[in-house]
Image (cartoon, rainbow, N blue to C red):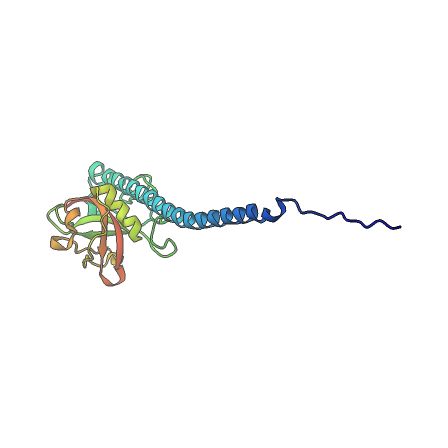
Length: 214
């Protein structure tokens, strides 16, 4: 006689709930992915802010260096600011800002500019409201981004100021008409800062450093 096999295979009580831990892990991974995505945006914003601060600090230092070079020629050498040669290629004459026997400094970098491939330093003759009495102030200017401009003014005035636009003259032809009411009120009398020029080819934000006051 053949015996009937009556054994029944029973599932482990935990087999039916194995899906629970898997779903939990998936949920955790989804939360992590969302956190990383959100954090990447914050990281980008933080990096941009830090870059603006670094550039603003470097520009202010460059401005101070240019002022030292100008002082060497005008105060120690006895030349008028309008007689100083600011051409970066002229490095031998006694009246050249970037000559070892003149200003004794190197031509400044454009790496902090709005567009380093096309922007360059200009050395403008013109008025600055609150400084000097005439239109022969010598001012070094470089076009910058709005973020860098704001950080420059934050370091100078304590306020992250994006100045109101004004027609300050065509800086690209080394001419300024920034005296009077056109100069930003927060920067009146300040020999360093950032302005918003609306004059045609010179439109944009500009770091400025007054090198000599007349």
